[in-house]
Length: 111
Image 1 (cartoon, one colour):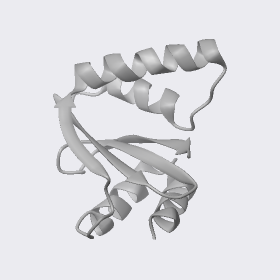
Image 2: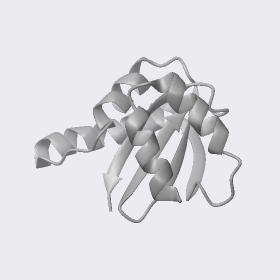
Image 3: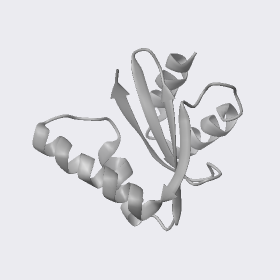
Image 4: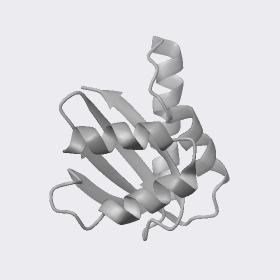
């Protein structure tokens, strides 16, 4: 089930309003998110900006990482919710406001 969700999110990843609607539709389903937590935007920005720098240095590419880092940098959110969905083939991390009313982006990882 999670692989289907991840694939559907991948298809709409560039349309953040559609992502917001989709996440709000699935957020109440059992066992969708492997974990979810809230941190300050500055803290998550520092972590993922470092990961972006390292990915450039190492030549590794993660779909959505650059976009998420840029949106976090310029966002006016105080806190950012990080929600992870794990599938068999891919996983993704969704960066949003605490209530999912604002989606900053999604990073996709191959497992």
